[in-house]
Image (cartoon, rainbow, N blue to C red; front, side, top):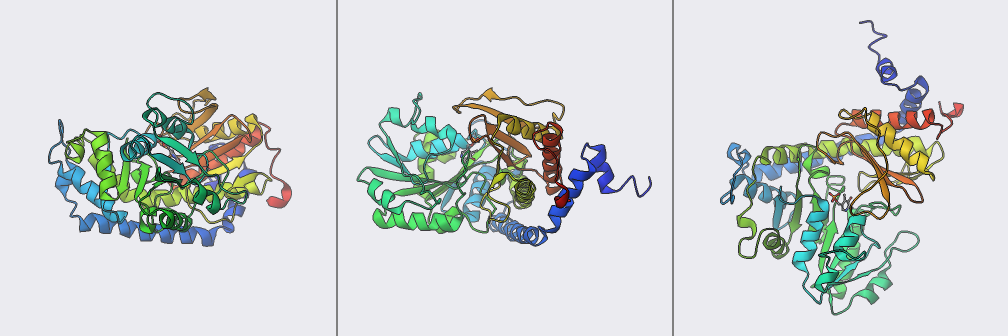
Amino acid sequence: MSAQTTAISSIYKDMGISEEVYRYGEKMLEKLDARFRRIDETAEYNQLKVVKAMQDNKVSEACLLGTTGYGYNDIGRDTLEAVYASLFHAESALVRPQITCGTHALALALMSNLRPGDELLSVVGKPYDTLEEVIGIRDSKGSLKEYGISYRQVDLLEDGSFDYEGIRQAINERTRLVTIQRSKGYQTRPTLSVERIRQVIAFVKEIKPEIICMVDNCYGEFVERIEPTDVGADMCVGSLIKNPGGGLAPIGGYIVGKKECVENAAYRLTSPGLGKEVGASLSALPSFYQGLFLAPTVTAGALKGAIFAANLYENLGFKVVPDGSESRHDIIQAVEFGTPEGVIAFCEGIQAAAPVDSFVVPEPWDMPGYDSQVIMAAGAFVSGSSIELSADGPIKPPYAVYFQGGLTWQHAKFGILKSLQHCIDKGVIPGIPAHLL
Ligand SMILES: *Cc1c(COP(=O)(O)O)cnc(C)c1O
């Protein structure tokens, strides 16, 4: 092959990316050098943090073998939980394939640590859509509300800051657990930094020290060098088919934190009396360990993709959250299109960039747990995995699309260029103005 046909631009061309879109991307990347270097440094820090946790807990070859049946004396499972506890500087951890998804992990943490008569308080406004039914904000079978657990929320102020006065007023004798969602979810508010989480936890604890502070850590793991449990969170909860599974975990969720909180969750997951002692790991352990090992660099790639997308779309005049230069505390990038057509075209482009199912065309549908139609693009090795290149958007104003993931930076980059190309081909975006090339 000649040098010309092996040029990077020529393979992009083969993959349907025009010269114009490719050049626009390259131009943007020149400005992102220093930021990408800082992301690599964080990945380096976190890579060593993971290796240290594995070494300190003496992960051995035997830990990679699974158990079946009851799973008594599952050394691989118990060691993995010790690794998570070390990594998060927490007393205990529950990391299981029996936790089916992030929503399940959060529901488990809440239902096991709240009792009838208790009140749950969200200090960051409305929680993630699927939690509305867990809590009973939207009536649902088995919700916390059905069990006599009430709920209150304090919205963030207009400028995105905590409403400290509102929080003070909302805390009462029944308030037992405060939930803090780190990532914005399907909203356009800012994601919280771990430092901001520290401040709100300190404030809550000063008013009532016995309140359990729980952080929904979905999409936040390894974006910074510290995690919410480093700044006072009693519980930190997330999904293994997001950041900490490193793209390899096929299922699972985790809860780390205070021993008592994690034990409560374990007794609820299995049964009173059994707790953490049962729960076979089956064949999940190699992917849990290896995925955790890869998670810091996978997260870094996804983060670069998010920043790249923000800059590409921002310069074309779209509102993006976070904006192109803001500091990052999760891997989600929102782009507001203002029209359903924009959301759909973007998602079609992401789908077309996938290694699996690139030939299918995603459509909006009624998903369980969501109150509007949602379109999701994911051509993933693990079904529904959103640490893999994926995009989704509820079909409702402001018609924002939420983009995340990419197991490698190179793939994230291709996906974003493909989305842009698709938006241009569909007429959602008129083209790249000459001054940007
Ligand atoms: C993804 C997510 C959840 C729910 O996780 P699922 O695995 O989709 O059930 C909860 N909270 C936040 C902030 C999330 O991003």
